[in-house]
Length: 282
Image (cartoon, rainbow, N blue to C red; front, side, top):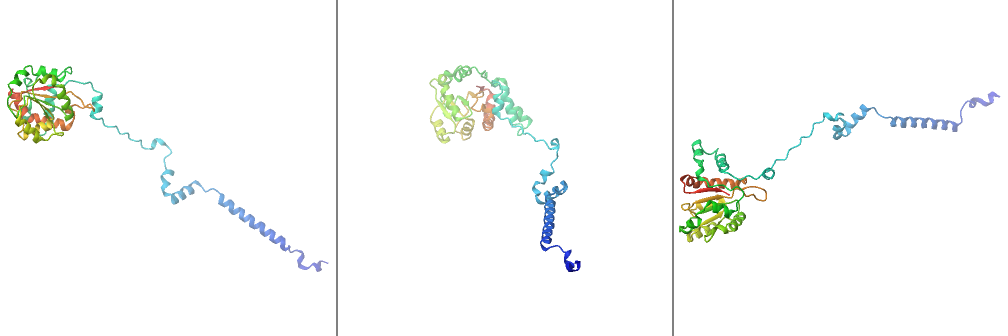
């Protein structure tokens, strides 16, 4: 009976063979998926990240200790003239202040002997404003004999008194404040805004002007073009203590300071030393 079965008794059916093959494949697939899902070591991940994403290398290699990172440098904001003056107590100007400005301004361009010549004796100054005066009251104190002096003034191209300020707008304000002092005398605007210098020269040539109010730049230009003479000048007053909207005085504005000191150095200082001109700080 065994002979009748032959060799087929030990062979597996075809269906079972296919099922077993399917089982083997599923086991191989499961092993492959498990291998893919296995996490790589940290060293391999870091190496891969460096290769694929070089831009993020600095993030992965940052020091863990935050104290090792360099601290940010904070830059301090520079103080402006307005900041300094806003925190300072208003102080009346003095002849010493003007003397120091003259020496500082011309220090690099003048010899020791020339710097000595710029110094003015106290007799060149009238009493400075102590911040209690109006312009009219200060001029009355400075020029007590103004009525007599102004009546005797007949010379053209010249003035008796010069008031020097920082801007055209300030000059117009001062002209209004000076009305109580001037009386019947004639005042001339000496600034560049809306007024041509040739028109001002013609006005000085045709009329007797007693008092000039203006900016140092235009006054210096009128003297330089022989439109204004200093021969009759008796007083020069600097609008020293007034502050603008930015709290700057006239000597805190670089261009105004430069022109004012050059105006003084151009002939007024020598006239003060000679005793013919008095200098006041309002």
